[in-house]
Every structure is written in structure tokens, then in C-alpha cells.
Length: 133
Image (cartoon, rainbow, N blue to C red; front, side):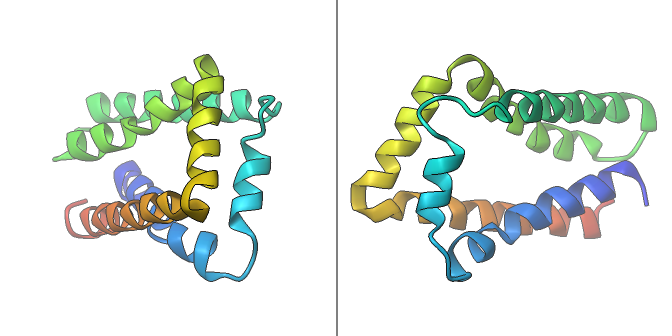
């Protein structure tokens, strides 16, 4: 398997299963999200965001050097994760306000909707990894 198959399967399955592990398993996901994105930025966020940006850079490197057909599709889709990483590093207060607002309005229904959309996106990524790469 090439890098893009692995990336698509891991990235896609994580997104595909997000509605399951966040909302179908009985636990308080809203409390978890509120704690994970506390008002004061937790110390784990910056290193994890930097690792994520490193993976995006590695993906672009693989795109330009591996010669895998259609790798640009997954490279661009995976690069969208860099937006969250950059926001977590440079504008955490606004990100926290956005998440806190979603948790308080409608008992977190917007978060459920976002996770469902992430699941559909993940399914598309898994299908791309299996059928194209």
C-alpha cells in the first residue's frame, strides 16, 4: 500500500467513525469537548497541531515525489485540517468561543451536525482510498 492509501484509510476512518464514538457510545461528549477545548488553551494543543501540520507537509512532499496518480485530491482534502491547526495555534480564543457557543445553544446539536458531515466526508475519503489508490 502506498502512503495515500494509508492516509485515506486512517484519516477517512477517523472521520467516518466520529459520529459513532462521539455520539452513539453512551458518555457525555459535550463535557469532553468542553474540557478538551477549555477556556485556557491546554498544553497538548500546540504540539498536536504542529504534528498535524508536519503530516500535511509530508503529504505535500509525497504528492510531489511519489508519482501517485490522483494524489492531489487527497492532498488537498487532508490539507484542510491545517486550517484547524493554524486556528488552534494562532487564534485559540476565537476557536474556543465558537465551540463554547455551539455547546450552549441547542444542547450541542450543531456539534452533532458537524460530526455527521465529518462522517460523510470520511466515507468519501475511505472510498477514495479503496477505489482510487
